[in-house]
Image (cartoon, rainbow, N blue to C red):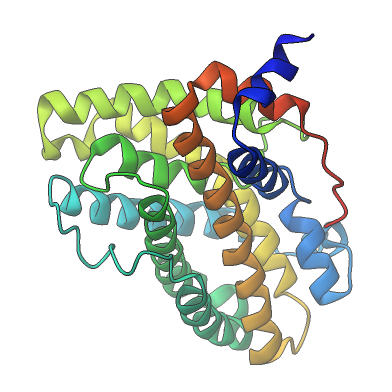
Length: 279
């Protein structure tokens, strides 16, 4: 019998089902496909119509948004209550979706010009939701590693423009971010919270930003249709946060199972699972 098959058999029926669900969430269709189905137009066409200065605006807004999330993460480190990130046992996905939809309504009305104001708010709300999901899967939000893992979820939602292969699997994507997380985590642990300007942390932020900005560009493109209006703007934002909530659920489910069975066993079992990527 193949070692991977043995790995799958090592899991309880409930845990194997959880892993299957996690794989579906992590390997589900790209955000661009989800957004295209909402706006009824291929995103490539919409992105080609965006003004030249849009990319610069997206890059600046993305970096600002991630720095704001990092600031929240550093403020909550070491705090067992970690409020206001910890809420009830089940994650408040709908509450966060509603809040992000509200910011999307404003973004739909003002488009690209609303980005510097809207994106930091939207990203912070998504980050809080990701932290909430992490906590629901048994993660300790007072630890450096957990907070950085929450931040990396924003970089797992898709590939960066520098990626040669747009079809990276979850473990390859996670491995590409793991070393940067490890270095940043150890640097904060040894130098304290003032290390938010450290080289390792800046490298991690830049890596995440390169990936996250691609998804932000797709979101902006979806809102670039003339007279998109508040309702469709809210729908685009709801799809946006739902995509990252799915990635967070998948990622932290895998981490929970790895704590129980070991990383090698879970990765081997993950590879045996076949899912229909029908969206």
